[in-house]
Length: 131
Length: 380
Image (cartoon, rainbow over the protein chains, first blue to last red):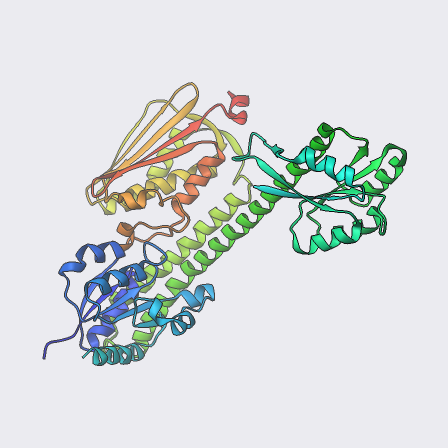
């Protein structure tokens, strides 16, 4: 069976390091890009089964911009948006997302402090739904 | 922009006259983008006026004191309390000038003695309008300043939290022995943690510089000093860093570049720029520093042969906490405060800083410091 391939876009190389470590440990193939810009420029030739995007990169909403572009090309690819926004601003993104999920081009929203095994469960769920 | 004027007078003739004078009247100040239009509302009693105030946003009230029921003076305290932004102009006859004075004491903005000409009326309205307009601008500025402070603090908390999260993540990996029982397997990870701690220390140091800058106090005494000496001192103190990357300096400063400034501030300024020129350089690269002066200014150029800055990033590099995509993806440590400190520092001396760059080739900062600021003139 071919390994599931996950695209990770995050501008914090240390955080990405840790994520990639766990994703690989859970048995996924990974592609890592450090910015919205670098991801956009390669979007058309990349092949992946699921994307994990940081929300704030070059722009405050880089992750959402990128998500829209990914969905425009392949609407079936599940997207997880990761941010630390609630911790910092007190603004609860998850509430917004629960209230009107159809407004956002993502499938799941997670806080950055999420435990790796919990994240893995979410990935497994999204991949199963997709199948 | 339209301001609403409410006329409160029981004599219809007076109301008509005022209305006529203010119809098609607009106020134009040189600082306005578009003239202020006046929209007139009428009330024949104090009671009616209070009703209108409930559902119309009024800016100026022309208030006759002698009214059938409640008097003008009677409703003033109420208006002042509930609508503190409204400017009240009391209309009163010359005979009762004492009432006018009384009204002013109670918070009337001005009074218009009867009989008045349309010109006098317009003058009084114009003065009140100007006052309202300036008050509004001040309020907006205050709101803006608060917004900027809030934004700064929320970015700051992000910048402080991110490394803590990183450290926590690495420590969890160690605690769970994700790389096995042998401590040697964790050396790379420990190095990364130590680097993060260095970053945090640098951020705190930069924050200190930054808050000092914003307190409007000079860091250290101002004195007459040679910027050439300051630059050479900074270059020497950063040579060890340059040697690690085999970077050489090419310094071309012909005169001593005398300038009246705080030595501490000038060192912070040039240390930041020279440090950037080394940090964002390539191995075996060059840092080229040129200095020259004219009668009126000192011009210093600091150029590197480094990774450069993408056009999209160029306009943002002086923003607080902004770090270029290039810098972040290459894992170059930095706080994102250095250049905003540099910019503010230069602005304190009424100077300018410009940047030119080509990705993967060079970045060049050009600083112009005017010599003819008051302090420098006094010394020269």
